Image (cartoon, rainbow over all chains, first blue to last red; front, side, top):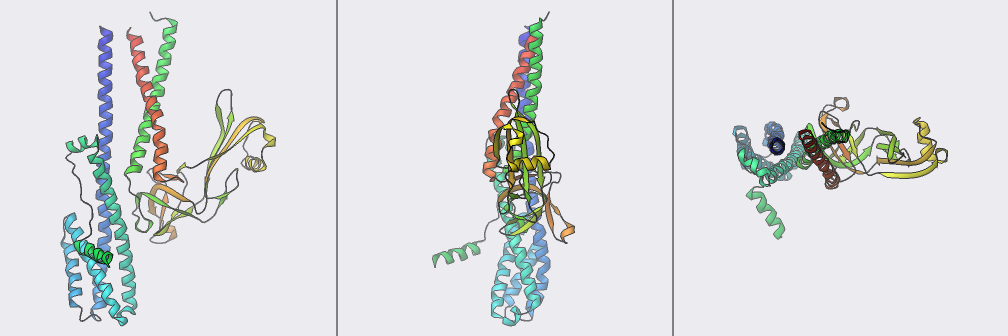
Length: 190
Length: 236
């Protein structure tokens, strides 16, 4: 009788300990994934700030040359203000897309101004900002990978049980704007 | 009163339990590493953030060393010399040597200090039976240079793995500032986090690691069964 009791106690304890270890492993894993997303976003934010700091210099350097391109400069100024005032991740992402679009327009339009293109200051700024844009593109990709890993994990069995307890929900990735998609579709249809 | 045979059996159960526990913790640690590799997105060198990172790239050497037995140019090698004992292989000597190199991908390159990395490399081996004085010159010269003492006669296996220049590798390490090389330069090295270098792709490496998981799982079961039998013997 004592033997059977000890056996039952042993098996129950075993199940309990195994369940606890498994739960803690999944819990820690999900917490890590969530923090990875926050870190990936923070790393994008660092570059957004750097780019934002370069924009007033760029606007000053082109203002004298591109007197008839007021709309282009206004768009860029507005987009910069949006990102400074943006609080949430989605607002900052939206403002980031606006700045990227405005910068593409400025650099495209600058092709019509040979004297501007020859300006050393402008060229340095263009190089710097293009470099930042490339790094931003890489970090957006990294951010999307982090989101993807997280979303897969919280939707897979048995992690989704723990995710539900922690009230973790799927996150949205960085997406191209409708304008950018239109440009690609136009390109493909030619 | 417990008889002599039963006492021996209980000792065996206790040993089985301890061994099983070791397998359990090794397996648990391996699961953590597998999950870490699976869940870490790959970074591009151009936009690398400081801290733990996963990279793919091609090796660009600064300086090279010779692999121990095949004498090929490389930047990292590991070797193991085994000898057949009474019933199983015994490791006589093993070691690792490395030199810093650059890792290059489509976006840039970064300095790597591979010291302290776990090396998951494809291995080549030379099997030899006879007097160690009849070993190939390449092998003998390495043994003499490194002042390795091996048995005069026996069955040996000389195993090496190395990373050559221009080879594509996978790396998980820590990116940290490298002020010696300039204001904005960085280096990948062993920080406080996991550091692994492999000549296999991420998927192949994970496949390899997961293959050995089942042995660790079997070991964990050994622990449970041993403990159960021990308790049974003790109680009955």
